[in-house]
Image (cartoon, rainbow, N blue to C red; front, top):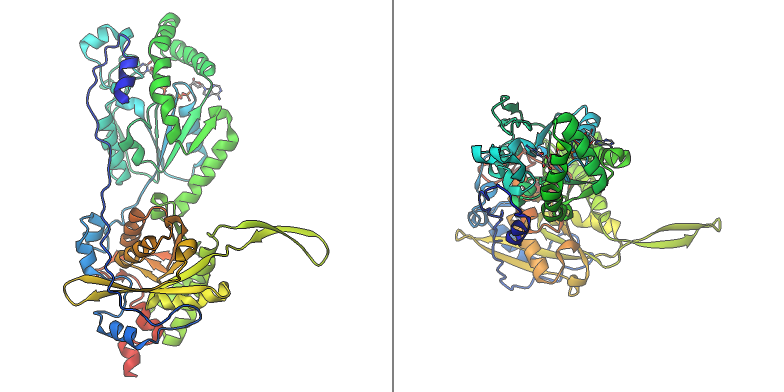
Length: 522
Ligand SMILES: Nc1ncnc2c1ncn2[C@@H]1O[C@H](COP(=O)(O)OP(=O)(O)O)[C@@H](O)[C@H]1O
Ligand SMILES: Nc1ccn([C@@H]2O[C@H](COP(=O)(O)O)[C@@H](O)[C@H]2O)c(=O)n1
Ligand SMILES: [Mg+2]
């Protein structure tokens, strides 16, 4: 496809087609699920707690009280850097919000970027121009510059651009070359040192052309301005600012600029998240974009990467509850009380992500009220045993809701996982609220979600509710299942050498159900 386009545009152009590209690819194999097939006692509907002897035996026999996060064998199955590392600082690097701005030449890209930067005045923003990565022309190319296609993807050193963007994304400083449009050279002015920032904007006619560069972007904007307006602006800019001859400008336009727009720039419009008609004149669009960027910057960095990750808005009440449940000195009674409060908030937030239908009712005043009807086909699934602590909150919010159970068990030292499940027969037709208060490595969550999907639950119908998530678990779940939703109340720093969430709050199940050593001794 790309080859065809290159041939179509190769009207006598001096550009050398400099290199081929490898598209970015992500490979990940979820750990396999094994079922042992031992039936649990009927666990559906209004059965608070887990009192089946056989299951309690399994829990006792299992190596570790918390069943929802620590599975070393699962970690060994993946070669992803996030999951193999044990450092608490893993992946804790700050993530800039990367915005790509593409559109035809003279469409108003630079103008739109300047307006965004001005309005984000309280943020650290850097602008990178794709123009800075034009190849320097050879002597031969310089001699016949009118035949050089500056609008073709091969006119840019995309490898260098990619490397600079990757560095900035990884919070490293870079030197951006300074391109001189008059001499077609870079060494006239020194390179510009660009420090990492909260927001990085990359603008250029072909900013969306390379898939690897696109992958780095959190938001893609296409500036859509009529061709005649673009041509008029270009004539003024190239004659006034660049001192070019109008005949040469028009020649360049019909020979290269217009065909390249049709063949390379316009086809990238489909990658845009936002299309701005009329560029800088569109104040409403720019206001909305700035508002969205501000919201994103206020969120946890992982929310910039994974749009389906929702961290409930922090308040002092929520921070206070976290302070209490995380405190090692908190009594069991207080732990349960504040954990229940937090769980209720997470459950209510999770329910807010369910689909709804519009419903009109008549109020006692005889007036019509247009509201919504709750989603009816629902069920909860708790990951035994910690997840059971969330069942009551779900029952309190959804009268008569069916609740299934999954037990993920590490068998001895051979690292095999067994899953015991008791789920509603018609689970594939329901929206599922998966309950587990801690998301640690993500291994248990991946197993539980894989089982639900195997049972026919569509991925977008699963909402995973938890109180505390480790970034490693978020990466693992979101990469494996990009269409499920995760709702959590706080994201912690990471995992320690024992794969426990830190700062965390210890073994949730033990603290909630009173089975930790201290309680047993007293
Ligand atoms: N809304 C606008 N109204 C009038 N002139 C504009 C507008 N937007 C941009 N321009 C002018 O058009 C030219 C191209 O705009 P620019 O933002 O540099 O486009 P791009 O970066 O897409 O090439 C510049 O001379 C700029 O001053
Ligand atoms: N030496 C050069 C390099 C590029 N161009 C033209 O610039 C346009 C891209 O810049 P925008 O700010 O408009 O995005 C592109 O259309 C090139 O033809 C040039 O004329 N001379
Ligand atoms: Mg520009």
